[in-house]
Image 1 (cartoon, rainbow, N blue to C red):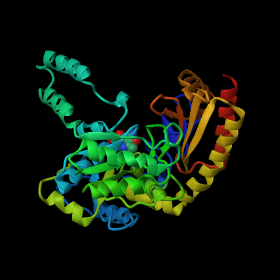
Image 2 (cartoon, rainbow, N blue to C red):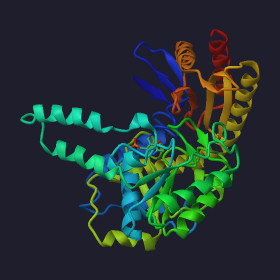
Image 3 (tube, rainbow, N blue to C red):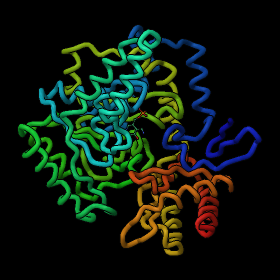
Image 4 (cartoon, rainbow, N blue to C red):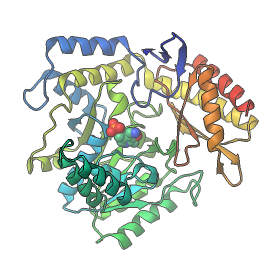
Length: 425
Ligand code: PMP
């Protein structure tokens, strides 16, 4: 019911160390005073729709964000969420190239609307036709109460999930080619050659898969994949919803860790420190395609949201939070690796900065997902006052993604608690 920096408090006043919520919401910390002040000041001045009247708060944040981008990535469109940002990015890629096919990575997550659910490549996040039929049945039954547009939406959903191809995931832990990024990238070429006309609209991927269980793409993967996609006329989209905004510590954006410059970058979540905002950044040349049709988003990038986003960028700078993510993240990863030496159930420790994953397996050779055990450890850790996340395709990966103000002392505490919980298994 309350939050303060890296801590949360329940209704009994009990304190929890939040080693998870940084990813979804609060990159600078819960209720960061500078961000709150910016939100309140803007709300006292004016709050309105982005598309009706111009306001400095919107342009100021766009300019600050563009200054954080490499190359010619200088045009910013705002949305309310990561899903909306990726929907817009996919639409821009299709409009710009005149092609329809999109390539995304297996195990990736990009959102839950029509096109993004197509790009998402984990069965548990997708609708299947039977489910859609069931939903349609209920909608038909309650037609008088629900507005009928819904059944049209679901039919549409089935159609637009086509035109997406899911390429081999360059997963160093579970993938066939270990850490050889270039070998995995050959599947992009094969997907283009065998699954499309030879021309594609684009390729979308995270640099480190978040929902997928903090999977760092094998080194060398993105440069090779981008090259192949561009030769097929496609645009390269970096989904930075989780890996972006200083979290990886070594770089401000996740894609920079692979040494590439995308054509379109999308972001959301932590960039507003809890206030809903997403963004699409692209080049002036690509952005021009939106003059060919209307694009309208009533609240995407409204003055209060952009004031929050701008305040986040200032806090990251003022409190050197990227550096903190690097220093504390490296320290924490070392400690997690030491825990791996002690507990056989830890199969893999991975990630960068404060975007870390710990995969639990009951058999290190077979990599059998330890699903029941992870739930037990997670609950036990919660009882001891530490919150970590859980994810990955099999739901057996701890996601350690705290607010970027997380300290070495917090890391020690978290490790001690995790050690006790693992020992109790
Ligand atoms: N992309 C990635 C990488 C994400 O992790 C998420 C959210 N989990 C999204 C897109 C969608 O963002 P939102 O929930 O804000 O729509």
